[in-house]
Image 1 (cartoon, rainbow, N blue to C red):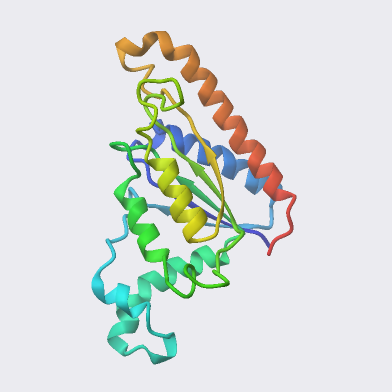
Image 2 (cartoon, helix red, strand yellow; image 1 turned 60 degrees about the vertical axis):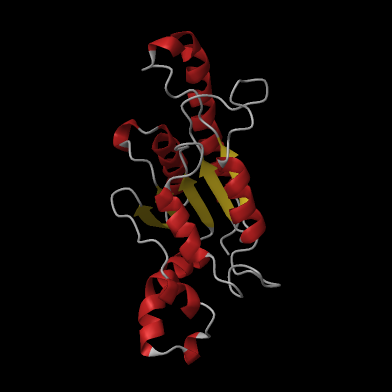
Length: 216
């Protein structure tokens, strides 16, 4: 039975463009996996705390050797890691906020990074698992645009999720999302609409592609 870990982070609720794309992916994935299961976290509605020292250092101690205090501190990290390990695919929304990712997503990443288990080991427990990242942005950061080079979302997430955790990362990028609401960007509305349609189609296509893979 296939399992999807779906994590949303946008603060914009039903008007969120990243949530629209993750919802499109999930609809197709569930249609293609009627017996599957979904683990869902909305980190805007229910944020996880930032990683603290006790939980961080407990990660360097084997579970059987942890004290009661260390086990309590590590409990949330263990839960988040086990959710990721149980999933056959990980679906993340990562809208650009101030040139980078939401702090709620950074907190999740910090908890899931576990040296010797999910990272910095010969056999990371998440290695090879597909991760679909929807990273929406109000403008465009493509080559040739004034903001080119100021996108720290994709480069960071490729390093953290791809290199650090060994995930197989696919990015879906809805851009120019502010065009319908910012008068100065009105001429860009057709490009926004094209980008939105392409992003939804890409999410659906990737969901179908992954549905053809056997569950781990």
